[in-house]
Image 1 (cartoon, rainbow, N blue to C red):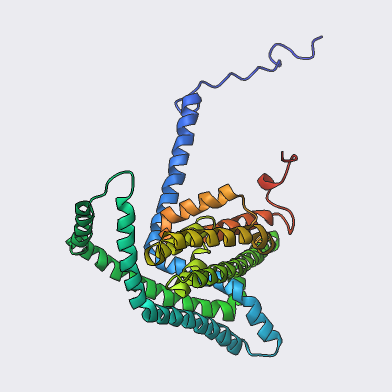
Image 2: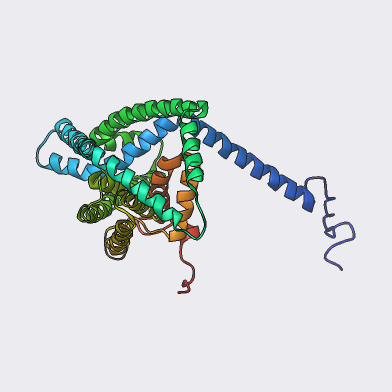
Length: 374
């Protein structure tokens, strides 16, 4: 007797008839709509960020500075100083150092401006003589037309509107600067308390992960800023001494420019060297410019081969291609500020991935699954 009668035999389910959204094209359309929704959300976030960019940039800069200065504040606290007093000492120390550097720059420019103007006039005359000896001809009329074009632009309405935009940008800069100082004060004073307040919604494993992320962020930002500042100081001192030996005017302001530009990886040192060489070309002639270029290359090679691997190895574990792409994206989104912030933000993102599942356990997609080819 069969185990199943005719009525009891199982019946294979009928395949469902494809509908408009379940066939191959429908699935592609569904995925496309999801992608469009995600892109729209990203665009909305970027729009909102653009509306509050002054606040966001001020907070990010304050966070980076507080991460670098917090060990100094903690050291003063361990020595028995009150939290408020330690915070004020750290904040005033920053303001005094930055103010002293700004005063030195203004003093150097004022004291050497007449010499620079005379040297620039002589250098432009010599440069015009060099241009006449080129294989192709650049006539005096062409140079005069170029000067008239520059003069016309400087007196045009377009330049005036640009100047007004510059005044507006300066106002936004000082607003952001004041806001950054205030936020920096509270980060130095109550940083751990603020972070614990933000972690209130998390419990258990989520809380532990959030704590790891916060600790890693502060560690990476602090190491990055301190390491970059040390490398930038060495670059500025080396190139500044070289400029002073060659006799280039405004050696001190140019050294400060080198220090600031060094915070933009890869391209910053090149741009600073180009500015120093241009000043040397105009003020001292082509031989001095070539010497300055040699000094810049020598200092950059020493910094790249000796200082960078020692000071930045722990904080900046990013491939050069990733750094370049981050710089490009940051520059397109926020200009110079974006170029400065892009690399530390990328380093923080990678640091978060590296501790996502544990102190030394990165997120699953980032875990190494096979040996990398060398």
